[in-house]
Amino acid sequence: MDSDYGVPRELSDLQKNRSLYTPELPPCLQGTTVRVEFGDATAAVDPSGAHAIARSFPLTYGQPLAHFFREKSKAANAQTINEHPAVRVGLVFCGRQSPGGHNVVWGLHEALRIHNPKSVLLGFLGGSDGLFAQKTLEITDNVLATYKNQGGYDLLGRTKDQIRTTEQVNSAMAACKALNLDGLVIVGGVTSNTDAAQLAETFAESKCSTKVVGVPVTLNGDLKNQFVEANVGFDTICKVNSQLISNVCTDALSAEKYYYFIRLMGRKASHVAVECTLQSHPNMVILGEEVAASKLTIFDITKQICDAVQARAEQDKNHGVILLPEGLIESIPEVYALLQEIHSLLRQGVAADNISTQLSPWASALFEFMPPFIRKQLLLHPESDDSAQLSQIETEKLLAELVEAEINKRLKEGTYKGKKFNAICHFFGYQARGSLPSKFDCDYAYVLGHICYHILAAGLNGYMATVTNLKSPSNKWRCGAAPMTAMMTVKHYGRGSGSGATPLGKPVVHPATVDLRGKVYDLLRQNATRFLMDDVYRNPGPLQFDGPGADSKAVSLCVEDLDYMGRIKELNEYLDKVRTIVKPGCSQDVLKAALSAMSSVTDILSVMTSQRLE
Image (cartoon, rainbow, N blue to C red; front, side, top):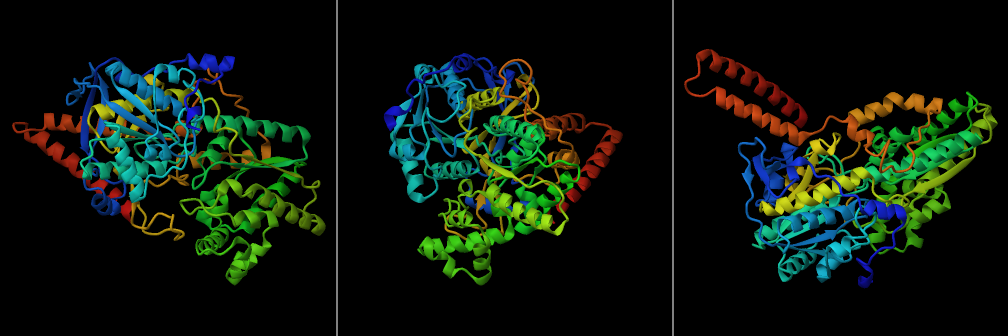
């Protein structure tokens, strides 16, 4: 009910202590004067999609990067934003709740208050449905008092995460006009920020004065690109799950007779599974990206696990812990094809009870092979994006059952000589979403909220708040904003053709999957054998807010060599130096040296760019 939103929470002693913590802003956002510098016009990361993106977003594509600096910075081209009139801003939670989301609201409210106390922040109640219905709650210090540094989205609530159809977009625009909003902040993941980009373009085309800003908040950690290093909520989710996994690892080592199959959140991308593996060191993890790249069948995966169980049994180890992302089931080629047939029949109105009789012969054979509980789950209606209801499909139980059958077969054949195989299954899907956010997520979300204000103060539309150099202490974070269209790509091939699926050729912010050539995956592979055979289980413990571990960050964040925005800024500084040194009147030797160096650089970059397009 709407009356339940924003009511004071009853807080435990720990929650009260957390509500008193105020994150420290990076130097560039401190004080009442912040300067903004605009870089060069942005381009699509994949040049082959640039034309399609420019055609779909003629008013918001190609906008420059924005970098924020403190008042006394040496950024020569930075402009000081001197005028801070009272503004009205709306904020909506879209997508699944992620720890830290409330601090985005707090950070934005604080920035509005600092620069003009007469500004108003309205939270839309019940997610996008509240936006369409113009149901709002004015955010005040009193309203925020028991929500600072707290988990969940219960301050405002959420529903479905779509602002996509013509009717929905028009309803959003009508709400912004009726409420006289200067800005609309959309908090969410890849789907929500794709919708935000389209909303910004439509508003600009319709001469609607409301500016749209996106914030990268998603527990899946898949809104990653050259501008966005991490998502609010991912750090907390991985730390909470890693402790649970580590507890299970210790239990397995103590009893020495159980194999634990643990399914984790992570739909199209396995980032949560990777990070939890690096933090807690379970024996095995199977990534959806690996399965898709190698086109592994369900029988291949079963054999892979059984071979690992057998190898451990030969060392008298009859226990273990195996992690699986929830999106794994859709990464298995034959299961994905089966799901597509089922979803197609469901869209045609075929009753679930009659589906099995209308499947193609091969799909029918696979369907009948599945255990009854999986058959029932595969028949569930798909999500709005045409994906299966992954949280409801118990992949861990399916694999545990198949592995047990294969191990028993090997036992009879005499190839497996270990003890009886015993499996225990878990799904860690909802246990972490409402957790108190980690110190990192509290700080990161609060800073992003402040950046949202400065994006609006600079008059920008269609931008996402960004922070780079996140693996460093917060006083070295670089704050900025990047056009959401610069994060878009265009897929010219795809899987599935449902009405909710993304049409091919349409620009969207696609989820970033685990890079099988990246440093994080390489670290995982380097340790795979050791994790499998040596039981080097590691327990990071519960969330820490002070003392050892309080400032720890995701392993995957620290391993990658990021800070794209910082390097763009550094490159521009070098180019400016070249322009200063090489100008009419310089010596022939200086000019020749510059030409030689620039020629070499452009040749190398041309080769690198052409290789990427092949």
